Length: 150
Image (cartoon, rainbow, N blue to C red; front, side):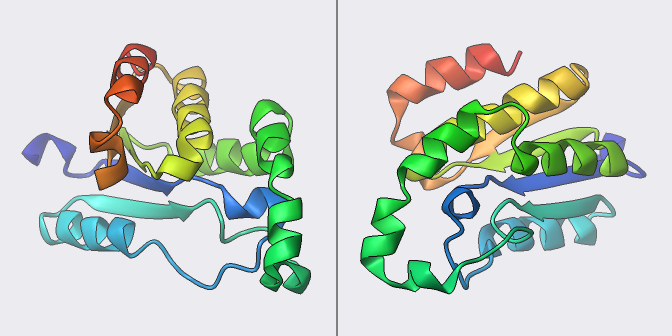
């Protein structure tokens, strides 16, 4: 890891809830713990929470409303010009990381893949990696992520 000193690592919790304006109250503690561990080793890490920066709607506290909006996720992921993706591109430009790590949850597989795609388009030399216990359990996804992150 010594080769990463004076370089930045971007740790990404991919957007999911933000596509349907879910009023989520958590924070990706897994990314924060990893960032802290990297910092202890002299490596600057930035946490990007894809569900933090966008409009929230308190109506989504009602389960029915949250479920009604689920289709917004697929539409948002597929829209290359969606404001969420524009924000992520802006963040990539500002941070200019050497490595991008993405945590994967089963529900956010598509947006995780999109984060990797956008990262490669921004700079194909950025090293990418994925983690999380959901990705370990998804062997069919593994082949797709590995081949798409080269």
